[in-house]
Image 1 (cartoon, one colour):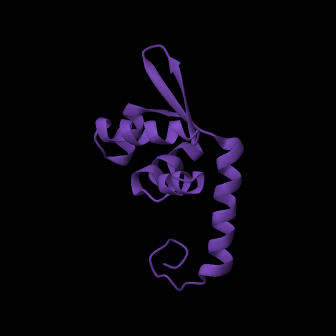
Image 2: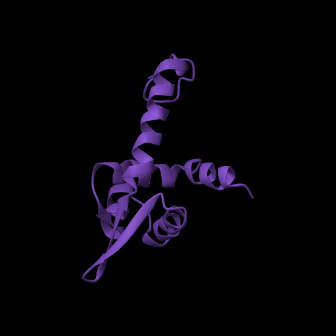
Length: 101
């Protein structure tokens, strides 16, 4: 499996994108993310593990909690490129994204 496939596979999952979007704003523990995203902690932990394995998110222990953060050095530029691409090339054609609605 190519590195491109692994990378984009992480970004092609709705839950993982939601995690990335939430961590863009602030660091959070599993409980906070679970509450925010309204998803079971076990399902969320699986998604976080996959994101962590590809270094898209990072984890650090704070007491009894694991706090997750976005790898801002690499992910913020990528998210900016995606946003700019959508603004320039989507042009209201898809009808499904925030830009088009």
